[in-house]
Length: 116
Length: 109
Image (cartoon, each protein chain N blue to C red):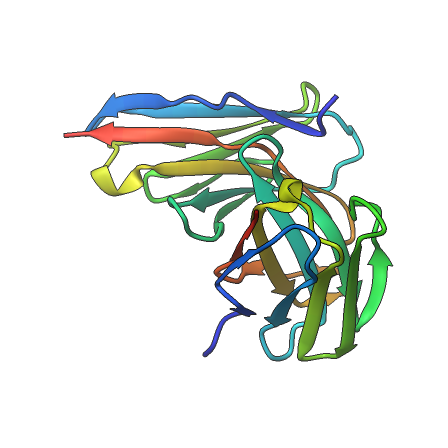
C-alpha cells in the first residue's frame, strides 16, 4: 500500500516567493497533520484536519502560512511570501481517528524547504 | 516550558549494551504516549506505544510513570541498527500531539 505521499521532496526558492507543499494521505485515514521540523525547535504541529475540516491551527506561525484540504485525498500547505526562517523540513502525517479508537500516525517522507 | 522534554544526547554505547532514555511531560491530563524512531534525513516512525502497565516489544521496554510525569525507553542488547534519534510523543487530547526534540543514540561496534 502507498504511504503518505508528499511533493515536492525538495524545494529551493528565493525570499518573497510563494511556496506550495502538497500531501496525499493514506487512503481511508480521516485525520491529516502538517508538521515542521528544525534543529532549533524540533518537530512542531502546525495544523491538523479531521474529515477535511481544520480543527486546530494554533501552531501556524503567522498569516503567511495557510493550509487547505479540499477533499479526503489531498492537502496543501502554502507559504506566501516565504522567508529564510521558514527553511525546514515539512512533514505531512495521517491517521485513522474514530471515537474510542486512535490509530498510528504515519508520516510522509517530508519536503525539505530552503528559502534563500 | 516545553510540553515534552528529552535529553538530546548523544548516547554513545557499544554493541550489546543496555541503554535507557527518559522523557518528561508537563500536562498531567495527557492521555497517550509513544516512542517514535527517526533515522537521519527520514521521517519519524512509530516504535511503540507506552501503556500504563509498561510494555515490552522484543529488546525494547517502555514504561510510564504518571505520578512523576515521565516516560522511559529501555533498549537491551543494542544493535548497530538501533542508531537513530528517539522521539518521545505525548497526546493531550484527540489529535493534539507534542513531540520531544529527540535523543540521539549512536551504537558503536
